[in-house]
Image 1: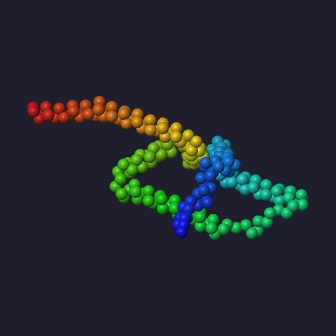
Image 2: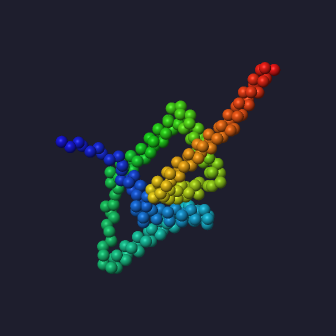
Length: 206
């Protein structure tokens, strides 16, 4: 009697997102990069208003659909029937579950950082937020979003391709940092501590 296979935890939405950032769907991935780059250039470099760009985009989509439908009619072909177009309940539930899972992970992370008394994680989180606030002072929100999208589209595929080399380099850097810390601790921290202890003993003897 065969054991029942557990249901897969991944959803089509997450699979699609993974395929896009790993460039398995090259056309969609290239479209994301091109659209984000064009949007950043129009809004940041040429200082266009967001509503203006959005209106132009909607006009372009409507004009393209209008021309496409009329060309099909001229060629004697029936345009696709979109009157029955709808979003299935399954797709809606998958999207809702994805957002719910993300919100639960954020709440668990906040609880782990603040309540479970893990001082190292708490200090590391504060340091990361301080660095982010410092970096954010040099960029506006749109530029940070564009940098985030670009990093999401580049870093995972590079790691998938050169993951072994990156791990080896990381271990090498970690080892060098460990040796540097040992040398610093031995030649600086311990010597200063020993000098401080000697000075305290001399003061007591005096």
